[in-house]
Amino acid sequence: MGEALMIYAVPVRDLPGRPVRTVRTGRSPQGQRVGIAFTRADLLVAAMGADQLWEELCESALRGMLRPLGIDVIQVDPLLVAPPLDPAPRLGQARTKRTASATTWPSVSSVRISTLPSVPAVNG
Image (tube, rainbow, N blue to C red; front, side, top):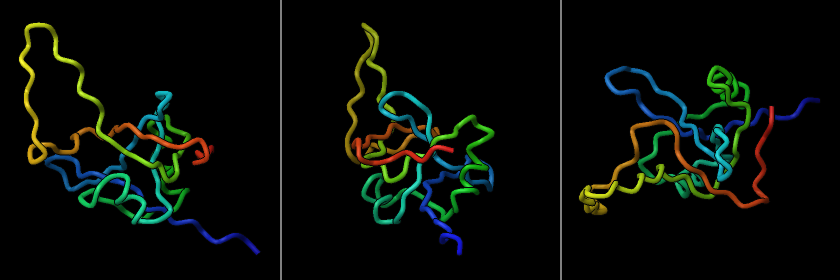
């Protein structure tokens, strides 16, 4: 008898001005571009926040969406998913003060992820 189909909570974002959603991707601490999936919705919320949109997808559907992007690794249950760091301002540029109320998730799909060594990446 075959194994049960694994369904993941996958972070998504709406494309501006279009009725389309796309999967969020990330970069591992080593810089490799990866897909992101969570085994439970509460783990997604803990890593990305309650406002993060998500969809339920099986692994094969997620891989089908990542393949055209050249991504063949899925990071399962990352501990932290954070927006990319803003580059340091150049000399002579004023720093903009950011408050918690003004901070938003980036409009790009790529984010940084942090994991412990014991959290496996699933290779295709």
